[in-house]
Length: 118
Image (cartoon, rainbow, N blue to C red; front, side):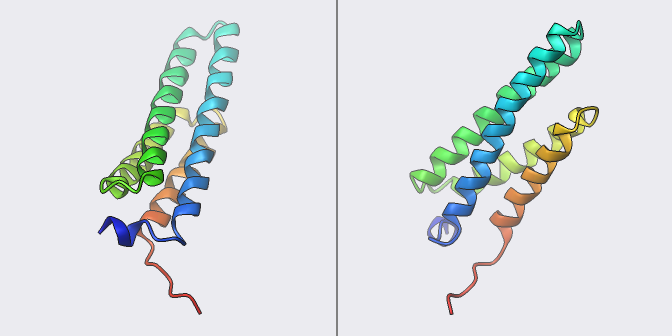
């Protein structure tokens, strides 16, 4: 099943989306630092924790896709769901919208049927 999921056409799209999630995690770290500097300690802590969770989940999924692990589909779907759910906490900042788009993109690539080459 993982061979079907990790087809040559799907792997680059998954890698790109997982790199996007890693980039969003880095952006969230910067936002957390800005929140800390602006005396919003609670918002900074929440944003920093979400950034760490995004980074860890995206890295684990990227590693599973890169090594063509049997659990790659499960980790990618779990990463997408976690990104979407935690994005609810980020609705006050615009990055929350970007993260939910990345999560939905991961789900779409994970569940979309593989197209036949012409």
